[in-house]
Image (cartoon, rainbow, N blue to C red; front, side, top):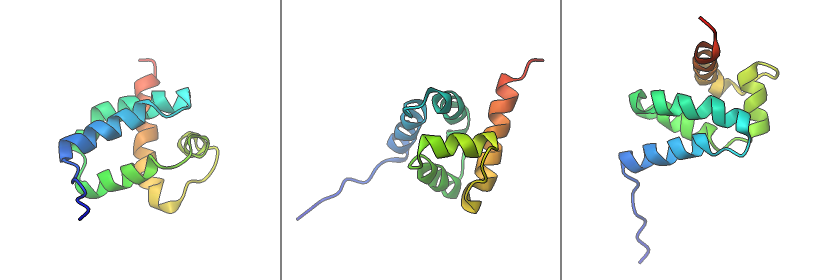
Length: 94
């Protein structure tokens, strides 16, 4: 009998925050890490599922999508717009 342990919501958030900060590409760490710290706990389950799928994408693609240098897959468009706006606001000088 194989028993797969169900991930608790708290463990899932913790895993996703860690994955956001430890991407492999420092630029993506600096975009996704602060976003995850600030926003993941506020997300509805469907958006969390989408963000979790986004974390499986390659950093090189994510960076081009977030920066607007390359069009992103349509399923990620709204989420990446939110992430990009968060990063832009965070790094803008008042």
